[in-house]
Amino acid sequence: MLHRAHILGWVTGVRLDEELADCYRAAAHGGADVMGLAHADLAPGSPADFVLVLGQGLPQVVVDMPQRDLVVHGGAVARKVAIRPTWGTRATPQTWTTAP
Image (cartoon, rainbow, N blue to C red):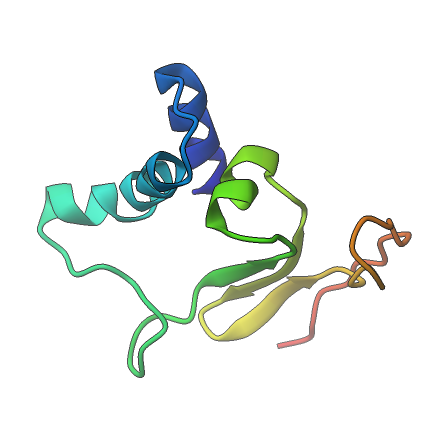
């Protein structure tokens, strides 16, 4: 969804933080809206599908599309990357998947 939000912001030429956040909301929830489904969130009972990224805020994440440091699918860690120790430095990624 981050890539879709990034492309939407790029082709529409948005610049403001709120506009970039709107691009994310359209990418993340637009499909559910069209199909009449509830939005996915981090509430109890919701599907545990999410990514963890390093960023200063949603607009910056939409613009920069940082690496996904943690991917959780169905409540299980699907991919984990070594977290960078400080902002702006790059650790050598060490990726692994967890056993079921």
